[in-house]
Image (cartoon, rainbow, N blue to C red; front, side, top):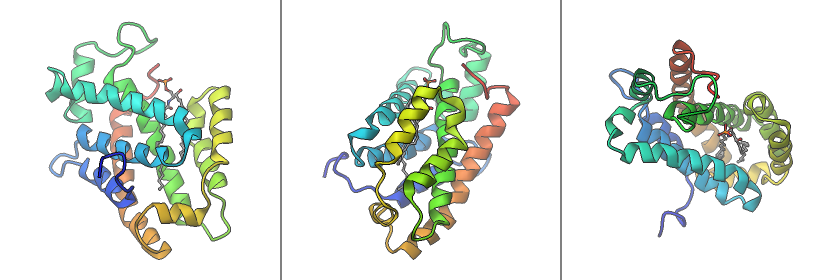
Length: 215
Ligand SMILES: CCCCCCCC/C=C\CCCCCCCC(=O)N[C@@H](COP(=O)(O)O)[C@H](O)/C=C/CCCCCCCCCCCCC
């Protein structure tokens, strides 16, 4: 089975976010962060071409980070903490407008970090949803409370229209490949705190260095 044909498993994706957190000092490890996003993108691709404008952007951002991890500075990009220290120390971040360093690791991760907030809200809404809940509504609400605040009108419009193509709640639970609905709810209850921890640590790191509004 090739990587593309591999069955999506939400448990595996969420365990990448768990593996992100280095036990000793709570550093967020870039390779696991990337691996979590790659799994999510694989899932999104399986939902149809209507989401390709979303996955294209996410893939582009993942590729920027993978390139850093293959470069001669790869060790500086081992964790989000080492990346921030390195890029700020070497003046590799455009702080006010995109110019000399339009694709710094700091601004690239910031975009994914904002999307992680959407994922956190969406999965929490799915976890606590009822049989008659509509995934398009759950997804739109999660989007409006997170990523939409950073997107121009045209992207917001395209995103909210595409959400109508999401599969129904039961199909969604099935494609997660976790088991029964009760199993999914239990797994999400156990795994979501790790996603939240990755989000909170990154948020604090970026706030401490005034990086939350990078252009
Ligand atoms: C089994 C359930 C699990 C849920 C699985 C969800 C899978 C989602 C996978 C990826 C999520 C999308 C990540 C999107 C990253 C967007 C980053 C961003 O904000 N980019 C914009 C700004 O970038 P710059 O221009 O400053 O470089 C960019 O303009 C955005 C372009 C594309 C539109 C993004 C729309 C985001 C909608 C997110 C919801 C995705 C819905 C998927 C539904 C499963």
